[in-house]
Image 1 (tube, helix red, strand yellow):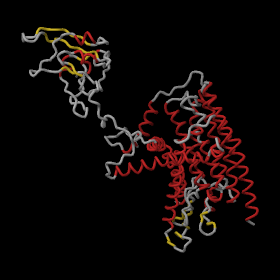
Image 2 (image 1 turned 180 degrees about the vertical axis):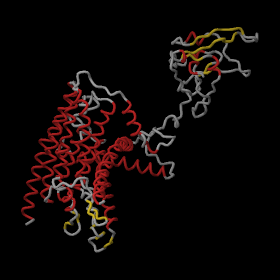
Image 3 (image 1 turned 135 degrees about the vertical axis):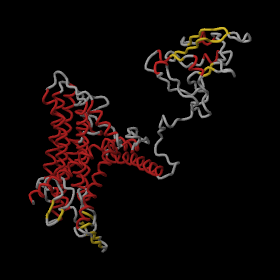
Image 4 (image 1 turned 90 degrees about the horizontal axis):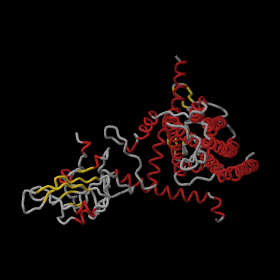
Length: 179
Length: 363
């Protein structure tokens, strides 16, 4: 250290000048914003629940089951996703479909989100493009483990996210929290 | 009737100082959060709301107080029951009363009465403030000792060591100011700072005693036990003297630090920044050195002076917060070296130089 740095006082003052410059610049920006200048930003903070940064279109978020035009699931219960899932979090019970053209339909399609690792293999494996992870929903939570199991009806009700990545449908309410 | 009025005036003087210090101390929690946030390009706590109104996060101190008051008041099984409970009160009490002899305005003349704007008129005000500030460390040492926790005890020891090394430098740096203004009465010191040097420069302590100002401010920040000198607390890794405290008792130790910050800011203002003096404002109104004059009524002058004092104290607090959020902590030995080998000899040197200058210049 040079003598000037060992005395410390000059270094303290230059440090204080730097932080003070930040303070007054940001304070000016905050004041300008309060007075109506919307382009002035005094902080880099994104105020999360109200403000979100846009999600990437490749983001893997909460799964949804794609519907046919008549509203029934596109899924044919081929068990591909259940087989490929490394976390063993998908549980399917197959049923016969009334239309002879279509082989099967899931009677149950449960995803245990407490186990899911969001690898996206189920989406890759699906031959019918029946499961996607494009809802943009990330804030699902529950007070119990059973509440993390999302059923076929919950997954079918979801819509894909908007162009900016904003969720288009509300977060499904887990079974243990439904009124 | 006059006795009642006297009582009311005395009560008002004390209440003003009390409410000023207490509210400012309470507000400092908010100032600390917001100022640090703005310095660091953040927004800071702004979520506490009453009926949807957030008001820049001003409700956070209230929310904090409610949280602290409703928390469990824990006491370790082997702790000294009496001293453990007493310690936070001692800390806060001496922080509160220290401000009493700091003048916040010139003598006010209303309806034939002369009201000194100062909670207590003492002719040794400087010594009183130091005595109270030094006694504040007893609360910290009590807390460290009575917790029956070795870490707390060591924290209390660090606090005592830091306090002694800071107190010595504070006391020695003040002597230069006392020599220049020739009084131990804070009101007299402030009044003497209203004179003009060479007809234009206000004779504030920062002008006549710049080295003492730097030494006093450094040691004063050390006396508040806040960040560059927070070895007693060391909240991030070395455990400090109030580890065993919870709820409002821990809150009171935090409060004591804020109160000491206010007291040091008030003392710095009184000794070095001209107290309630506004430059070129005399008892009759403004009189500028280039010949302009603007007569003002007595009450307006008094209001301006009290306002100037408040503004100066707030500016000092702002500066201390700025330092607190800029510098990293001194290691224990560095703090000791700074106190004993840096500040103390420098303040002695300042006394000698001041004495020589006074001897040669003034009759």
